[in-house]
Amino acid sequence: MIKQAIIPLAGLGTRLLPLTSVIPKELLPINGKPGLEYILDECLQSGITEVIFIISKKKRAIKQYFYNDSFYKKIIKKKKNMRLIEEYKKIKKYKKVIKFVYQDSPRGTGDAVLKCKNLIKSNFFLMLMPDDLIIKNNCSKSMIALHKKYKASIIASKRVKKNNVSRWGILKVKKINNRDFIINDVIEKPTVKKAPSRHAVIGRYILPKKIFKILEKQKPGQNGEIHITDSIRTLILSENKFIGHIFAGKYLDCGTMKGYINSTLEISKYNL
Ligand code: G1P
Image 1 (cartoon, protein in one colour):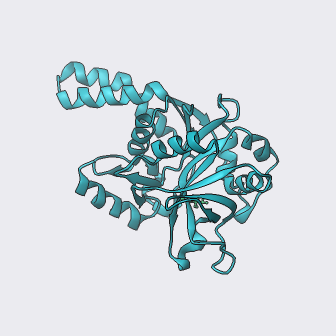
Image 2 (spheres, rainbow, N blue to C red):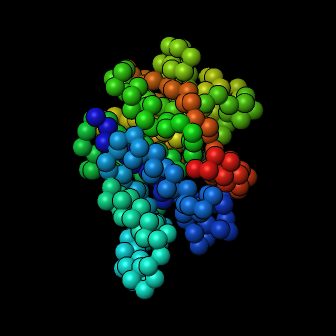
């Protein structure tokens, strides 16, 4: 059973500067609550019981957001405000499942994942990228069900425009049905010419624990960063089964200012 999830949160958020010089992008409100809460709710509703946050010293505000008990208690004592009491209960519920590990220099997603090596108990775990919100259908829940069915690693995917392939990890695929396919290869941010398909990797992964062994030896790739995609590729090319899944929910890219603004508009439409 998949019970643990990890969320890399140590990124600098340069695409959302200057806001992110003082507020971690994952705490920026989307329709009134931090983007990170949508991701946490997706985890909790899919049966995850432990969520590991990979943060850095610069992003301590994330820990503070969930560990501000005494602040809440003082105010609640003074004002018996129902909304505050409900918010406090919600934060306490999140706090119970969260653990923190630190990645102090931003050396890439692969390096962030490696920081969780000693905390992962089962053979597989879930990873969610906080920039990628998926609403209206719980993507992690569907992926956990697929993992049970195929006994394989799973990667969420979406078809993107040909001109946009170099923004994403791109999959080489062999169709199983309308939503699922076998992944035969993956390339991080290829040129249009080198892209093996238009199936992009979206930030939800079910990964095997053995990826840690590969990550320990992973050499830096594009832009000198250690990419999780490169270690996934090593696993795929050495016969580990990876299934791609075209998820049913609506994708919102919160990593850019345009996408962030749009996500508020979209989420407010559905009152989530
Ligand atoms: C990361 C991954 C990329 C994936 C993307 C999904 O890229 O490296 O393979 O397609 O997330 O959001 P980043 O957004 O960190 O540049």
